[in-house]
Length: 351
Image (cartoon, rainbow, N blue to C red; front, side):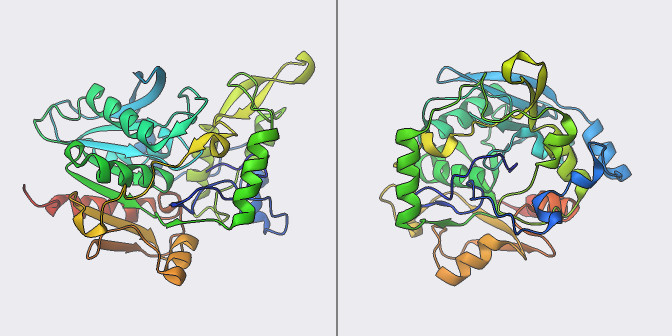
């Protein structure tokens, strides 16, 4: 997630406690608060493997779902088994640009930008039920069912919560679910009350009038940081993500154009989470095969272990990625690729 100038704290009942906006913490060390600032707008050194991966440019298109245009990136041949990648909160489909190409020889792949994020349209209201329909629309339009089977959904963080929700309510839509660093929890009452006050008093920006516009690209990149706060394990990955998180926007008083974050800054105010959770079902009854990857240094996992709170079914497989925080694809992208490829070579079991 890219940080914006919002001061909305964690929100949501039974939501992943991973990437909802946080109160700005000025005491954070510079490598956490502004990891790209030292480069003054210039890209960090990039290793050849990363450059080669992002050079495998996807086909970009839009799919209309519930009246909303959804940004979609695709790789691989139609007719091969399908993979659907879903990003975290305030992120976008390009977070998968240096991950997805490693699977393109064997799969038909789609990465979507959820509504309110990336180049997808914003909505006046966001729900997990709608996100689930959006994912299905993308999977159908991208040809992820063309091999005669169902796709495997892969979701990080908030996107992993969406994938999990879909697996609970619509197991017929996916062959299996892979979640990456997802935990569930409930914020304190004071936080929920603050969200309610903001929803009643704050003016909601429109897609053409974002909350903050930076005068230069260097200034905008200097404001980028990951949520929850952590060092960016690989600055070249963080820089690539940050540049694709921005769009051109008019400066105040008609003084030219600057740069603004693509995501809807009021996502958490507009998000209705009444349809999130197990929907009255027991964890033991979940039908979709599920695997959870997580970062060994993830703050989410620390919190989950402290509270022993999880919605995952008992006995599901969990795979630790060493030396990674919450943003596993930024911290250890090749380890994540290797883990996913190894898993998919033998899993899920044949129906």
